[in-house]
Length: 175
Image (tube, rainbow, N blue to C red; front, top):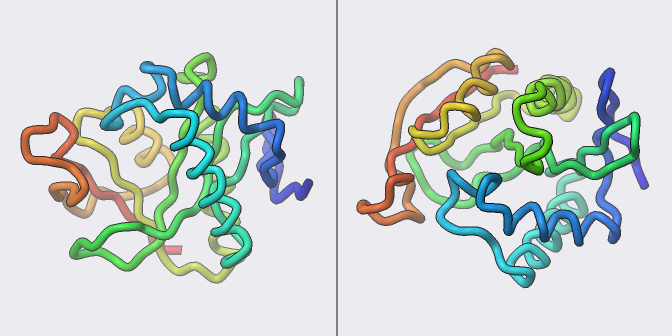
């Protein structure tokens, strides 16, 4: 296991096979997936886990597993990801997060995301994007708290126009 960074309460580390069961449970939780098109099946989460590993192997960075220092418990991820669709702001690298519902509204996403911004600088990344459905105010607040600025809005190309998640806000930060 590789530890990439630590904050006061968190460890950002490489993923372990033992993270997969709680990751599957997290991605099935309707509270966690409220601002996504649908909860993920076991197979979809396993494929996502594999994509995360592939990105680390290719780039040396990715979506870091997030662990509570006090307990060693896996609580989600925060990290960097190559944007996987075409839009006026791509290609680019996004900063993103997803935490188990028991760990929402405790400042963990903001705490870890601030550390990821510092890691991105150390990797030579010059700018980061973050985006979410316009109705996802909690994630938008994290973007603001880590110093990102709203630079636009867009319709997500992987969603249909009748989806309540179709309209997205776009934030960026220069490093």
